[in-house]
Length: 310
Ligand code: 8YV
Image (cartoon, rainbow, N blue to C red; front, top):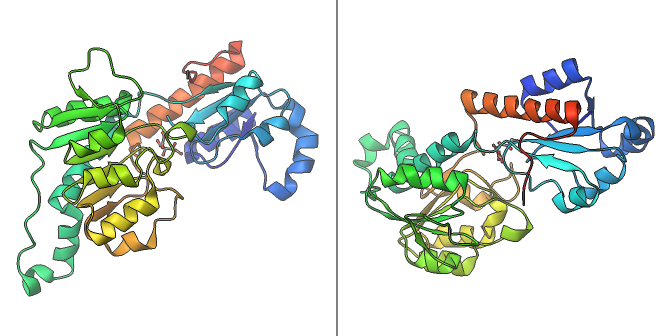
């Protein structure tokens, strides 16, 4: 089997030690690698950071499964995989709670200015400049969620405890949902104080949150993104956070990770995190276990535990 890209260190050790995993080399060394190993590789393990594109698939004629560490698989060409009969799996559900916890943390931080206030105290400004400016209340806010899937629902459940009125946008209305449905992201943005992006990445959601959506959210509005940077038009977001057309943002994901737009680094109305939504000991262990379960099942009988269904 083949490891594509870096993974959790203990998972990389297990793949090397217990599965004799080969590691995809640098592009300049791939031709020799493929001619020596291409035919023997039946499974690949990768993540939302790297993935397997159609070009790589074309060099692995016996590839049967692409096993993802992570719920997002937008880095893998799933259409090309389907055409070649290659199964794709991810690690759904086990990270819902931690990602939702972090989303709520970002809402609280963005509105109550937790990170800014911490910087303020550390810089000695409480003494030199006095109290910080007043912030915004979280309890009771109108919150819109783009993508009321597993993670979006876990976020909504938490914010109900803050007596927030929850609305959402999905491709289709969710049967039986107690929350208010909006058929477009702009209509949703226009009706809420806080817009949370929880939709999966990929071609279908690229720039779903565009300049018009951000303008509908407006100068009193906050954007939170724990999903994928690609879902938001990042240039439009940066412009509006810089000139006050948006109140603030809490961002765990970016368009070109690990690069963060320079202009955001000096803004105190923005909370910036290095893609840590699922990054707890507990959740990463559960993701690792589910990744290995998928791999073991594929090697045993050719099926996957949590295949990606589209
Ligand atoms: C991981 C994620 O950080 O699950 C996902 O889709 O974005 C995160 O949980 C990432 O996949 C690990 O590389």
